[in-house]
Image (cartoon, rainbow, N blue to C red):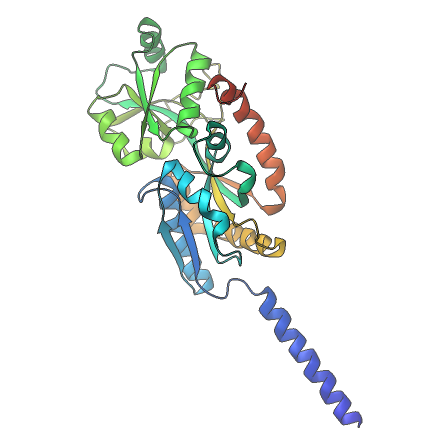
Amino acid sequence: MMKTSRFVSTLMAWITAVVTSAAWAFPEKNIQYIVSFVPGGESDVMARWQQVAFRNKYKHEMIVVNKPGAGGGLAWSQLNGMSADGYTIMGVNLPHIVLQPLEGQVQYKTADITPVYWFHYTADAIIVAADGPYKTFGDLVKAAKAKPGELTFGGSATFSANHLAHEKFNLYANVKSTYVPFKGTGELVPAVLGKHITGAMNYVPVAIQQKGRMRMLAVALDKRHPAFPDVPTFKELGFNWVDGAYRGVAVPKATPREVQKKVSDMMAWLNKDPQILKLMADGGYEVVDIPYDKNAAFMKERGKEYMEIAKRMGLVK
């Protein structure tokens, strides 16, 4: 009888251990990673880097699926209808998911999006053709003041980080210029090089990729970027402007909290991968580490700043 009892106890302990391990092991299979933009942009590039690190670490596949439309809004409006088991994640961007619902043309609200981890931001930068007439930020401002509304700056989508940056430029420099939305960087670059627009309101990665063909005039960082030691920060120019496009991942709202944390932990590990860190540093991506339990405070802080500019954009009163 004692042997039977001991056997049953041992068996139950083993079953409990197996069940517990299965319940908490993550990930155990492939993950679908939906990118809300076309291939080749910053969101897509980062996902491809994460895909390699994921494969090396977990021996499964991170299947990247591009689902562009409405400046990311198409995919974000569909997020909560997807599987909530942690094996479907979606790239999300700030300020996009705050500004787009205010404008009213998307089928989601900011509260519908459940971010679990933010991994980087790309700093705002004003970029012009290298062989164009503007050699300094001062040259640009002088021209904008002389020709109100005539200077045009391209960016990706409306109610996006680029759109917000354009409004900041007008506000801080006390000028009036015109924003021209493009579907993505692929269309934006030739428009700048061909001088169809005055310049781009974009990010440091584009300035790095186009170095020699394009000139960066100012950047929204705390200190000068090492790849551009001669380019001033907006802070040096007298503007309280350190910002850009933040990128992270979200899950469907129905995803259990413990699973949300597991996804956050997984992405945090990928964000510490040495190869990814090198690629981000070389490519002009600024590393951040905003996990699941710090997201609410982060969103509140960022949202407050976005709302101030949103008022100027006429999105809120």
